[in-house]
Image (tube, rainbow, N blue to C red):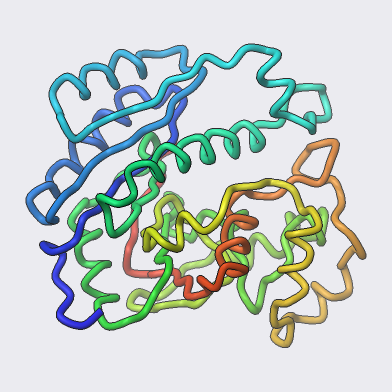
Length: 296
């Protein structure tokens, strides 16, 4: 990334939302402050199933901003039944499968416009709050680092790393699909810690509420929430040399139902990043200085 300058790059900000309402409006307003910082900055949002004022707000923003577009769908019960293979223990559709569907729908739409952009910035626009200019600082911190993906360090109100569900590393390559309840009782708490600033932590997967992707890396994969054969094949290629004995002791031989679903379900970001790795895009980092607070 020699001679890197943010004013020479184009960025597409994407995100999915449901009942995002006024939080979404505030975050779009904040991020719009960056429009003069890049060569081009556009927005593309996907929404389905909102019962609040989200659609009204999306239409209002679109009327005011020529660089803003959105997709809105009303999924029928038949649509949901086709999307969801798993159920909650009380018979409700699997939320993660619906989120996975939404992310792929948005990805495919973004891909149609990919020739206009250098980077994809994927964000949870309806729930996180941050200083938008920290995004510029993140680009600058990695200006001399070859990366395919930089993920943010989304924090809880206690200032601990939040998104353990999407996180995989040399120390923690096994999620609840392999560790079952042990992951929820032990491992998640070891991931959700306070990370020192100014660290570029190489990971197998992370999201944290926001991530910057080189467009070639982003469009090399698709989202999934199933630990299927493709996932297992990539998982088996990982380096397990730094895994502690407690995780090894509690491993299941194959994926197990977890997180309250009737089938093995995992965070959609993990198979997505493993798909990137399969395509040769393995330089994935957690930037501990790109911080924002979740207010949910």
